[in-house]
Image 1: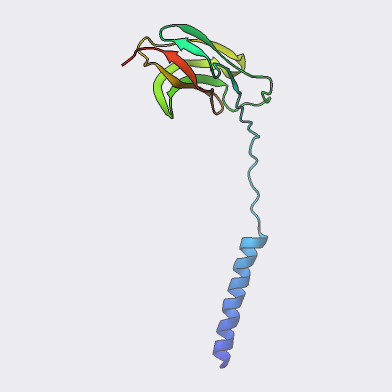
Image 2: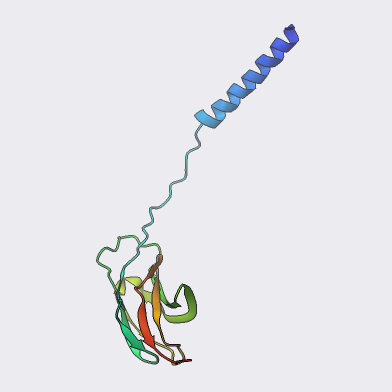
Amino acid sequence: MSAYSTRAILVVLTLFACLAQLVMGAAVPAQAVDKRDVFVPPVLYPHAGTVWAQGQTHNVTWDTSNAPEQITNRQGFILLRKGDLATPVVLGNGFDILLGRIEVTLPKSLLSGDDYSLVLFGDSGNFSPQFTINGVSL
């Protein structure tokens, strides 16, 4: 092996060692991130076996007993689901998720079905158990 080849290998190894030192040894200080708590309150009502009727007003309730001190988003809204699909029906919005209860009025044009559920959004989405709505029959 010539002196030139040995020198080239040493240069490459030195560069590799410097690069490894930069990647592994020189940690960049991370910026402090505020602690954020996600609150997923379980929906208590409606529950399995509940029957609602179209056009009527009903209470939606959820458990707030385990709410963390710092909630990322306290503005809640409730969507209606049918089966595995979210509908465009917003039953409530702009309320404080820590209230634990809100009245909602069902539209008068819902199809009958036993596969409805509610999605309670605030910090995250939480589904109610499936329940029945007596509505329009096809």
